Image (cartoon, rainbow, N blue to C red; front, side):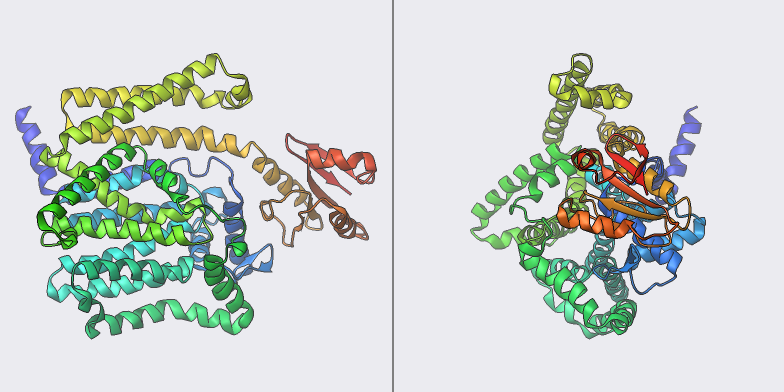
Length: 574
């Protein structure tokens, strides 16, 4: 038995890189792809971007993004291109295929983080731990299961930054290739999100090389001239073609309004104006279950920085990068802080934007845990922070179990809706932290880290199987169902009236859906115009139940027949 064990151990050590890739691939499947298509589209943005992808797929126009068969010039096309490719591969435009690109991009970012950590620190363990920290962070996990643009921007801007920094850890003859890939990924970042795809990588890389005291490296002709050519070859063709097609209309919508005006002017932020520190709680909540250990690391870092400053009498000591450890931590801190500040000063803020700094957080948190797992460092900090995390989760699970059997009046309806998964969630939040506590007692450092990862594996399984479907039960599933019913005949038309979720319907038609957002006198006039003189065509109308009840006594819907009434919406036909 001992000989067999030694054989396995020798094999694993000899092929550790392949083994790590296989392990990451398995967990990426479990975390990112499992259950990806079991719940309907869950928010307005997801529905919008899937509709745009399907429009591009069916219309075969790969230059102009369309939404509801109208030009939608605010977004670049890369995400929609990826979806179109996947639609062709799968020969399907369903929910799973529509989310596949997001999950694939998330997996790319996990593997690239593993590669970056391994190469920079010459440690496969560091790369693997950082990759798992990123993979198991709750905000990264949730957004990897929704079809939105932010995951692509995060991954490609991250890849551009990583490649530039890798030049500092590469042999002289390989540095130029790092820079060429940096420019290549920066071009993809632009095609994924717009001009911010230049700003974030350029800002982070410039500040890092300034801190490294190697600013001249950025402007070496052997790097910058071919790099710019690569960037232009990848990025510029679409911009030229779309400008030739739409001219200044595209320039004003895409460049002026979408990029500069919304960043500066809060009145153009579409209701996205938020306080300066809006992202702070999102970051701390988003890196669960690593939040407490990260906070512990922050305090430890501040204490160390003050101590070093007192000894050196200069802040230059904070920017020393004479070892790989110092260089990586300095880079990750600059990456995280500069990105956080950039999005914080913007007048337009959405919770998904802050995803861009999560790779940097993974590198910082991963360094902390790498020291603990491999070198028995930071033992006190890790044990205390883990214990606090587990106690909070156990208390949450117990409190949830009590509420399950003795629900407060204010939560009774919600708990009744959530009853299908509530006991699973409560049990998991108690059992896994207890296992983690046993790992602390047993002083098994590797298993303590693994217990955090498996905790989040259970959380995402419960979320995708039970929580997301429950969220769509609050109306989104009804919109999808009614849209399909209305599209049963090609001659039908569909109108929405009185709810503000514009573009929240899946467009199963080969024609535009008419959205009437307002339910005032002007909205009623629009509805009459949209539903009269249609000949033999059936005109379906989706309306919120409360709006329907307001206008029903006025006889507004006297000429309509009720097809189906659901919890939130009603489908009428004329």
